[in-house]
Amino acid sequence: MSKNVVIIGGHGKVALRLTRLLSPSHKLTSVIRSNSEDQIKDVVEAGSTPFVLSLEDDQAQAKFTDLFNTTKADVVFFTAGAGYRASEERTKKIEYEAVVNVLDAIENSTVKPRFLIISAVDIRDPTKVPEHYNEDDKKLSERMRQMMPAYFQWRYEADKNLVARTAFKWTILRPGGLTEEPGAGKASIGKTHLTVTISRDDLASILAALLDREDASGFAIDTVGGSVPIAEGLDAFIARGETDWIG
View 1 (cartoon, rainbow, N blue to C red):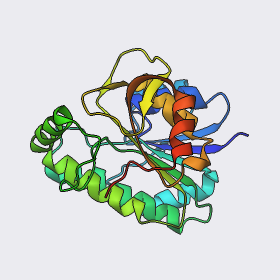
View 2 (view 1 turned 120 degrees about the vertical axis):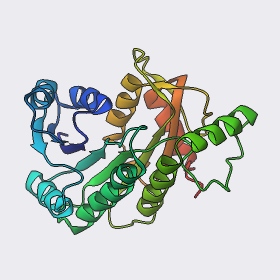
View 3 (view 1 turned 30 degrees about the horizontal axis):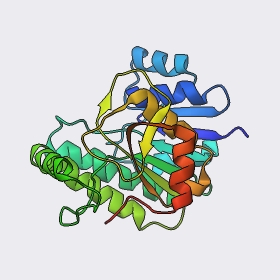
């Protein structure tokens, strides 16, 4: 069944890939920061309708609520990010404040769309270490947290805020490091290790597969590159019924 989909961060690399996958069968609206001809052209060519709205707009929450109601959104994808080189102030604005604004906008809407967000593997309370981590995972985790403390702090606070919500259905997708390698249509899904990357192609394919997986609601799902077909990996993860969110 065709769905009304809103993609926030619609000009990003993963977002444009997702748009191309979904546009043949669904009605898409892509929220972009700039009204530049290049951004609009890219979004339109991928198959979506551009909607210009900065996540840092003072009235963003109300405007998002209006957008969700006007488009009769069934599903909202949040694919935006501050970027690893962003200042601490901007990291907080995009990774935390903007996410919370969108969550509040969904709660204030009449349509209450499902919400799917790209987070990152290893977003957690730093005092809680996943049992399946090996020594390489622990070393890489510590190194990344030292390199990007603001990102890990505010991404964690945003995910923690989302996990506490019950007014709408949500799923958190938590990929490892992203690459430009061609997609394989396969991945490792659930309880992954940190030293493995995943292609943007495959990440977009997992997001697209989640569009129709309401049974993935309430889960945080870790994913990196692997050897299991994506649909099969999602089936197995959901059947296990164990979220990768450990608080």
